[in-house]
Structures are given as structure tokens and as C-alpha cells.
Length: 144
Length: 144
Image (tube, rainbow over all chains, first blue to last red; front, side, top):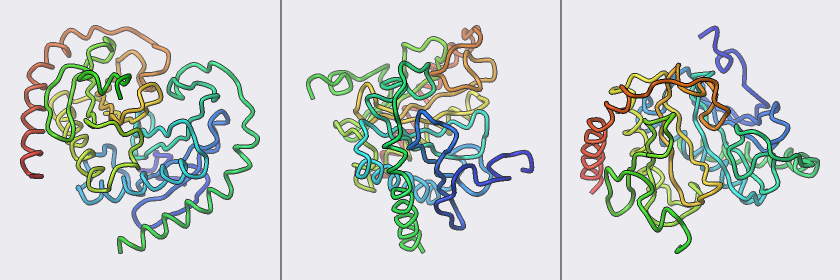
């Protein structure tokens, strides 16, 4: 799909890739720096269009990212979403949410209610990125 | 959790329930009538806190609902989300989206861009509700 941005590019800071999926950190949501995407490599629009084994493999990657976000960042909540209205190429948003973030407790797509200083959170992300990459590599190894 | 609305009540129009999960249609989002929720019966906040087998069982129910929404309503897209910032009791939103709906292509939590007449869509939902209930009952039968 030559006009699909997730076919043409990684879609963020690439942290892990195998033959099936990749993990990126989203760099264009400054209010929500701890925003990751698990992206299916091939172009499929809807989750239910995957075979069951691939749904399982994809969601285990999503759960792994969520688990590490919870462990390393102690967010108030992790949000998961597969929307794809603008880019109908299957990708899962995995977003660490904090009680003082711009929209909490509303979804990140709602109107901002406040501003916060994300300096400390941003500083923690490169180490988390490395952990996430290593953990997904381990998960991929198990599934071979 | 006596103060949790999803422990105290069904959380919508109940279409299916077994020992593990239930499916409801959400009745308080008039702009988005084809809005369903797959809800874990017990109180767990985060997807990754479930055992892997339960994650699989939950997501197969979500995929089943999505598949039927695609087949029966021909939406532009189905949106899936597990947020839980307000009610941290694991539940999956499964929402049929249409090109002329209030926010499309933005998420349903964004500011409305237009109004539409949902009369015909609403009229189709009782038949879909029955299909969804029957399909989830079949899925539950397979997993026994």
C-alpha cells in the first residue's frame, strides 16, 4: 500500500522489529511522551481479519509493553486502543496515563484540561525503550 | 469492589454473560449507537494482569464482536479500546464507526464535527444484538 504511512515508514522511533510486528515510540505527542505503538508489519485493517494465532501473538506483545510501562513508570493507568480511522493499518496504541497529564481521566483525544512538565518522564524513556526492545526480542524468541 | 459501577451493575444492555465475561450494548452514547463493551466479570484493572489464557479468551470475544459488526453494519472502521481511567475495571470498547458519524475520522472522544441521523442504524441493532449473543454463546461452548 504505497499511500499508507505505516507501510512506507516505521511510524515512530523504532525499538524492535521482527518478521511480524514492530514496536515504536511515538514522538509527536508531547503531552503524552510514554506513548508506544505495536504495529503489524503487513497491511491489514481490522484485528478480526487476522488469524487467531496472529491475534494472540500481537496481543502478547501489547501486554508485554503494558506490563513494562506499569512496572517502570507507575502510571495511574495504561490505555490500549486500536482505532485506525485515519491510517487503517493495524496498530495498537499503548499509552501510560498519569493523574496530572493533559487530559486525565479523559482519553488523550479529548480537549486538554491542563499542562504538565514532562521533563522527568521524558528522561526515563530511553532506558525504558531498551528494556522494551529486549523484552520483545525475548518474547519473539519464545514464539519461534 | 462495592464502589465500582462495573461490579455493581451490568454496565449496559446485557446481551451475553458467562462465568468469565459479559457483552453489553452501551445505551448512553447517542452519537454512536453501535457501541458494545466486552467486560471482564471480576475486578481487574489492567489487561496485562490477566493470565495469558484469559487475555486470549477475552480478545477472542472482542474479535467476534468486531467481526459481526463488520459483517452486519459495513462500518468504515471498528475501533477497539481498553481505557479504564474513570472505571478501572477491565472492559473493551468495540465501536462501529461511520464516515458520517459525529467525529469521524477522529476518535469518538474528540469534539463532534457534525450531526447525523442514526435512526436506521438504531433500527438494525436489536437483530445484531441477538446475533452477538448467539455467537458469544457458541464461542463460550467451544472453550469449555
